Image (cartoon, rainbow, N blue to C red; front, side, top):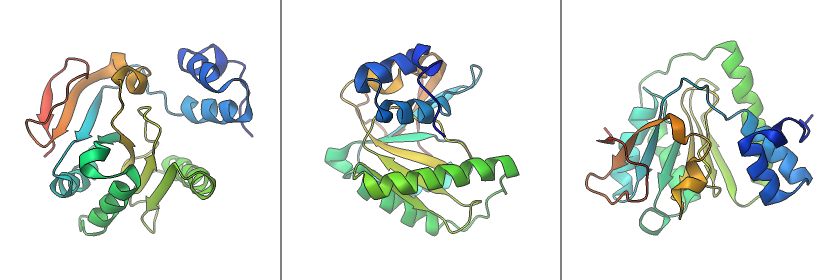
Length: 203
């Protein structure tokens, strides 16, 4: 069952959710979801952005996410399209990647199985959410959300596609102290508003 609002309501991220949604079931579900997304204190994170030239950006992203952890990618919905359109395009790119992924551990499989089930239900009931998955758990999972909050994936080759926020602190407040770099496509794109940190090109 869902965790209550007890201890999560006292966490900084829990307080923000309660302030936004109150003590409704929606708030309880959201706190449960976020409690699994808070990264370990020693984990270093990057913010990945695709702001234009979406076809080439997604081609690069599909190859990169099979090799390294990219938890959340932000897209410019004006130049790239909605998160749902971009997520579908990313799934198409991933279907054409021929490299065989490393098998997940049983614990990762269980987490991913639970997450896919949860988001499949949400996608059926909430038009702000959609999901694209490979046939097997060892493949890839693309979750598209209109919510801008930076999300932590539960397994390799799982990624969230989200719209670029109006204010970055609304998206990054959970992980701001652990950010170390910005991964950007295309080169020279305007990434103003982000915390100051090294920028590297999406390879």
